[in-house]
Image 1: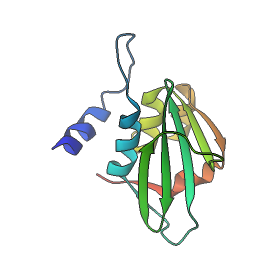
Image 2 (image 1 turned 60 degrees about the horizontal axis):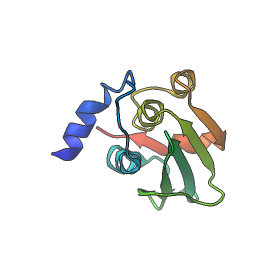
Image 3 (image 1 turned 120 degrees about the vertical axis):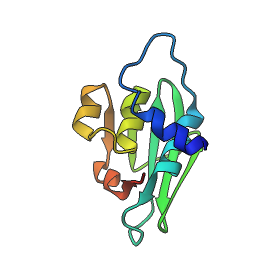
Image 4 (image 1 turned 30 degrees about the horizontal axis):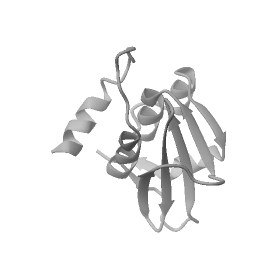
Amino acid sequence: MLKALGLWGLRFMVAERPADSFQARWLAYAPAWYTTDADPGAPPATIQLDASGEQAVIEIGDGQVRTRVGRIADPDLTLEGPPRAILGLLTGVIDLDLAVGLGLTATGRRDVLTRLRPVA
């Protein structure tokens, strides 16, 4: 039920308001719930997420997408920016160009993003 509610709510993340709150665990839930590893045979990869000062890590490998709150040393890719840009990109609601237009910065191996395939 919580996954369905989250997927429904993603489409409403178009505008951020000053009173909106955000928690790092939301960064961790979304990729684990709404993406899959598009290349299970590829070497493991990591993505560091930083949205509004909240950090989470995505670990992709062995056909799985695992996530956790926190930081990792030397990630393959770092995504920093507003929550709506990061979550929208990771769940396939928006593409990289639009996410960058919303304030996202992607540092490192952008090709790692092709490993995350959105699932409904």
